[in-house]
Length: 158
Image (cartoon, rainbow, N blue to C red):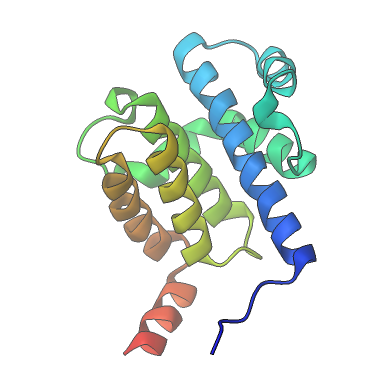
């Protein structure tokens, strides 16, 4: 028996959103390293292949939202990181910011999807075990930011 496949429309939407996260990660990495203006970073990212086929609205929301709310996002993460966020690798820090932003502002995206997408970003672009760190931090952050959804998810698994 074969497993059901996602509809092409959903796959395309998921892929476009994943590309938006990759583009946002690229931009946040640049911002964390250089401190350049978000508008300059956006133009730079839009000229790269990583931007092709992405959900433009989600990319812009992530890039500008994460930069504009960096202090609040870092505050949400601080309880669960083992060092100042400025000392994290830029890839891990950017993936955590994207995850915290989506947990806070993209309620339509299930928390497990948010965490998985941040983990996948870190696997693709980060250090060897960075994805494990991102997974642990966002799992705890999700419990802070979406307690009812996390509790319901845990109750459903037991």
